[in-house]
Figure 1 (cartoon, rainbow, N blue to C red):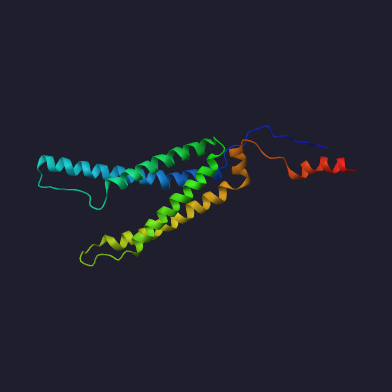
Figure 2 (cartoon, rainbow, N blue to C red):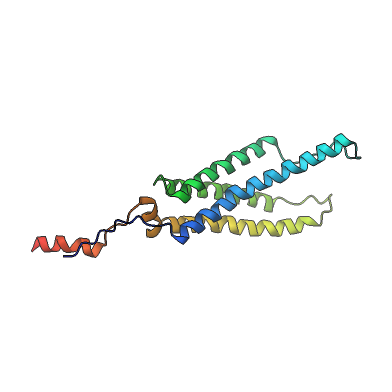
Length: 183
């Protein structure tokens, strides 16, 4: 009878690193960088207006302050979850990461679909509209694939062992003592 106890803590698998980094890029870094760009553009418009450079009333239309605040809160909240998932503690963070990715992925995909199926304004000629629509399709694909990967990999054995903090015993070796005691 040979019982092997693994006392070493499992290391972070490459798949966990990829899942955390991809979801952090999609749900934290990208939204927060979009907010930074919007803030910088608004600051430049205000500065140009204050200097009287011929620009007055500049603003970014279609962006409500409430939605920008919500985007910032969700981005920072997901960043906290991603950092805890990277560390591997607490063990329940694996499930929290999966839940957050599913919820944010569903909301993101829904918003992209609404934008894709909204008919363009025919009174305005904008050459960037078709390019933006094509990029929305790519973003939709990424928004669907990242949660699928996170769900798949975070439920695999190496990821569960990393978050649990120890390996489970081999079922074949664990069954041997039970078989011998029955004889």
